[in-house]
Image (cartoon, rainbow, N blue to C red; front, side, top):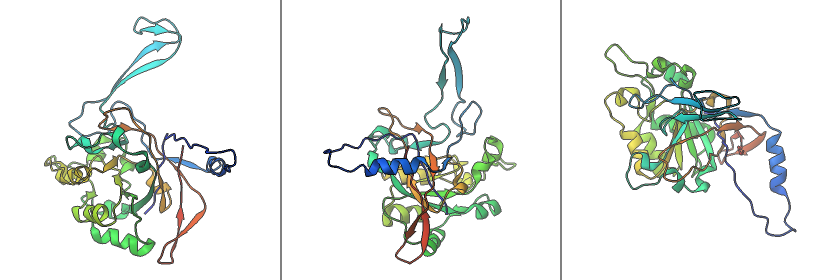
Length: 287
C-alpha cells in the first residue's frame, strides 16, 4: 500500500508579472532537501523481458583515445539497441491499439498524478498466481480512504526483488507455464471506470498473471490500453515508499510506443486526511 514515483520530467512555469511570489521556488528548495528513492531497474543486456523481444546490444562508438573499433576519438559515447518496452517503461495505448495515443500524445497533466499502491506482497509470496481482486482494492479504500480520481494505482508484489534473474521472474513450472502475479478485470474496471484513475503499474513484465500470459492471453493489458490509458511496467522499490504520493514521468519523442525512464521517490512529512478521518503520509515527486 505504498507509493511514489518521479522521473526526469522538466516543466516550465511562466511568471506572469514581477509581482508574483516565488512560492514554486520555495517548493523546489523544500523538495531538493528531501530523500529520493529510485523506482527503476538499471537496464543492460540480459535483463528480464517479455520472451518475444530480442536482447539489448550496446557498442562503444567513440573513445577517449584512438581505437580501431570506434568511429572517432576525444570522448566516450555508446550505441544502445533495444526495444521500447525495455526495463522500467511506459506502455501507451498505441502499444496494443492501432490509432490510439503514442507517448508523445499523452498530455503532461497526465504525468503528475496522485499515486496509490496496493501492498499485496504477502499474498503474492504465498501464491505466485495471485491476482489483485476488487475486494482487495476496496479494503485499501476502507483502510485509507477513497482512491482519488486521476490517480496512478500501482500493485506492490515485491516481485522486483527477483530482478535481474529472468528465471525467477518468469517462475516457470515443469510444463513451461509462468507463475507470477497480475491484476484482475473487476479490479481494473472499478479503478478505471468508477474511480476514474489515469493509469496503473506493476513490478512484473505483464499486466496479466503469468498463467494467462503463458497462453498468450493479454486481455487485461488490452483492456487498459484500449481505454486510451497508459501503464508502467517493471517498477521497483515500492516497498520504500509511503502509502499515498505523487507520480511524474518524462515526455518522449514523437510517435514512440514505449518510453524507458528513471523515476525516483520523494518523501515529505505532510499529513493527508481523508473524509474517513484517517491520516496518511503524502509524498510529492518532481525532478
